[in-house]
Length: 609
Image (cartoon, rainbow, N blue to C red; front, top):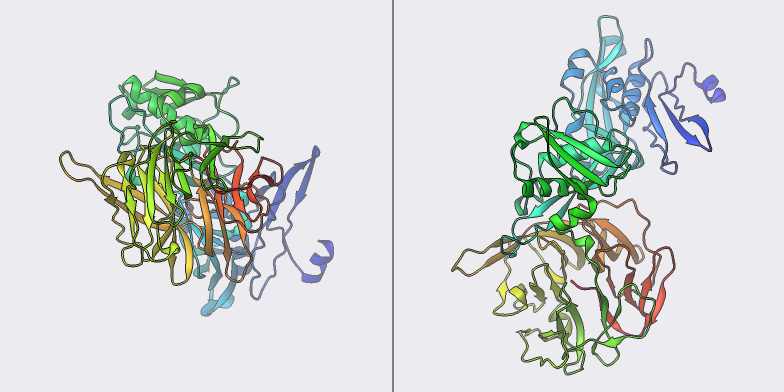
């Protein structure tokens, strides 16, 4: 840095990074600043040091406009909780009106900046710069992530104050930064609400928890951020199909400190008076929402206590949370199922290292009908199978001696690829399957796996369904849709209108892409409350397997080990169970921390669901 400083004249550090390495405090990240000319792009901080802390540096005395813009952009990537240093680069009025929390724009690299033609100059006392880059994503005021594409171009205007110091007086709302800085500064956390449109009935039915991922700043009181976001309600996308047990207007008490568990891992959450007087059952649901939401945050929270108006409302432990509400990832399937060489339904214990399958009990396991694909209900009492030619859908009990009966659905598609997809079960024993017949493409639902099919309305599909997977919560659905020669992964919401005495109406709405960069999705499966595992390829790329979030972001977990020739993949919501795939090597599985292992010959592997 010394040589660099001598070669360029007056320079200053734009930001300082500090991190602990083997007990030694290390300072890094001295960035240099030219006094004139175009600004270079703001270099994103490498992600490999997860303990990096970035501290913003205030503007230097008599700093030129280029240095003010550069320093401001650097300050946006710091761990300053309220962006106090970043505001020092603004005029007094701009500092009051700028709202960094309304959005975050993520670019492939840090934003570049250049003086605008006709935007004034240092001699005129005012100057404008254009911030540029290529968009990757945006995070809105609800902290919801959305993939984005295209060029980014926004202006900032600078003027000189009464002390002849350059400051920014006009700028876009929100913050902007490079992708690696975003990944270092922000983390994804799933808030939890309860499904409001499933067909489960009965006053004693446990509410089903639904994950709603948001992005919060990693080192700025994340526990307080997440709980505050939870209290404000679900994101706009998920809102139509979930409810919250928190009363309208509830928030953290005004005098509340940052939320931190005590030395017994007990977290006390003080709420305003809108929560006063609620019943015990509702309070337990509220506490369950908080416990589910904080489950993967550090430090660990083993118990939550809710307070309002100076009195305790209720307490709930992590163990009790699973009795107050149902969370799909807490389910532990008994078996992994697949189709063997004789086209029968077979199974092996889930998570077992064994390689010898047993025929599943019931007609589908007895080989009465040759099968191409199967699905097993989440309680593992019932199975559905598509015939080898893809024309017929059968439903049978997983009980020895049961008969199969007639198919519940037949496709009229002329070719095998134009017939029925692999079916999928929801949380309420609803059976979903798509018919790919070009003359009559449709998605149908058999409530409780029987009766007349309900044709699902999909007004904004714009393509033909190739694969269906319903989430365990029953309100989200993942579809591989083919359109214009491309197969993309879409995630939508299941909306139901089930009025007494009327024929049920079911629709899939708010479809959005979870893998906008993939144009050939081969197979996919739910792999957690808000995560899917996907096999596909980018334009001009090779086949790859990856995890994706339902919002289109990439989770901060390692991708699965490479595997060639993958035709189907399945995962359990319980992430302790291995991924299983059907590849050129037959049925293979991926235990945690190991490489792919061959299980046996067979096709169409599925966990229940």
